Image (cartoon, rainbow, N blue to C red):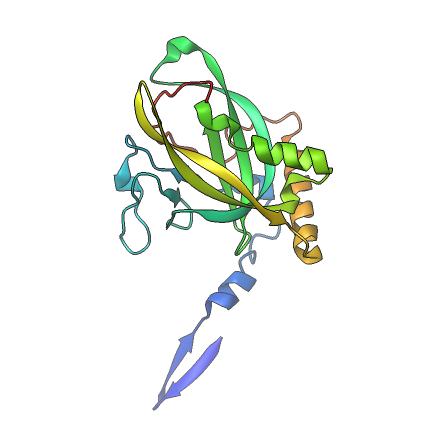
Length: 215
């Protein structure tokens, strides 16, 4: 905290660094599992864009990502994936299809390690297959890879839509980052055993159309 004198009055300022350092003050005894991470959503044609507005009042566009916690818009972003779990969901628009597979993911942003969740369903459920394969082939945990989430537009009989794309930037080599990532990944792995993941974090339907399942 910096105290600046201006005449007889003093002005107190508080830096973003101080806020970050004290982010857990008052929450020492809060179970991290009870903290509901925000979601990062990929905006589609049917997205409710009135909810996709950043801190400066700018509205996200089709094909951009929106962070519901930080209220930020990204064309792409870099992150680490801590946990991925396969589960079931029922499409509210086509309930007759019954339960379908999806992946729910927890990760941290590369720049500040803030937590987020993502859902991959329909054709997008294969988004992280490359990461899974690379991690298994090299016998490295997936959290040890820095990845970049991008987008790509595809088309089919039912129109055009945007799908997420996962690109591996590089294996992480910083021991301090790897240690922190390991601790967080193990914590979520332990909490996930026998637990239902559907309520793990904030989730919204981004209005993704029904695309071919074999993409």
